[in-house]
Image (cartoon, rainbow, N blue to C red; front, side, top):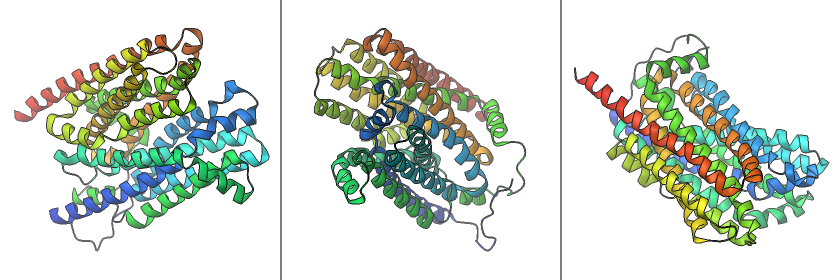
Length: 431
């Protein structure tokens, strides 16, 4: 297993060169993230409906989403291994291509009426989520430490474009399905495949030079045989740098809390007679909280520190869960404000914890650690999403919100520990 070397004729990049390439890298990733996110979100509105129709059971309707989350978790680690050897460009491009393949399989599943094929497609679509997640880390490869939060959060913000535009393309997707003579519910997946292919094209043609490989070149990192497995390198890095474990705990806890409560909110509202349109507005407000303020979160993370912003994210999550627990069925101000704060708390925690991972992951094991972080995050969120349905079925939505406070408290605890480790590291460095 070897690194793909930067062409030997390339001179060592100057600081000005790195700054210019960093700007181009972020712009490229923003464009790819926006287009790729459309490819993912356009199918969200119809995935559960298609799964229900193919399986013949409403209880199995959520399987498509669960398999997509699991696919993202698995792909995060697999793509990290590719990027460790070949760089960001090839790894992220591969993720978008796998996602496009999954979307096309979802279309085929609707044509041949196969639930199994739909679930396989959902797993592959998860690779696009993994590629989007890897893009946020790629934005930090060449960024100065004091600007990493801003660079990462700018790419996260680009998801807002796809998250807003995707669901609103459901109508045109139906017309596209008629044009192709495929089932109406598969139209969004057909358009989604186009979006993912466009994102792959953007990354493959514009992410040059590769930011990770260039960062290694600038650091004079020997491009020699790697020792051990990818998982082994990640474990060793986490063992040597405990702050990485704390950051991963904060990242996973915030993501699991958000996914668990968000996925069951539409059902809670529907039980109270809320219209589908109002439910859609609540989810849109939630998405706004997740992504719209991420650039500000990144700037605050750079200026105030990662740990304080992670702690703020945990506190906001606790407030959101309290509001959700108090929300009656149907439409209420508590559910609107609770879901907005749930998204905002997720943003605060995710941006700060992800930047913390980027800060402390050693360059030679950077993608390995980041892949591990996203794998843990995805598996934890998938587990939370699966358990959330059981909790709501047995005890109700308010109980789910109250139980989820354990995860939010874990985020706060991770922030406190991260702050202590950072202070300790600073004292050691001053000696």
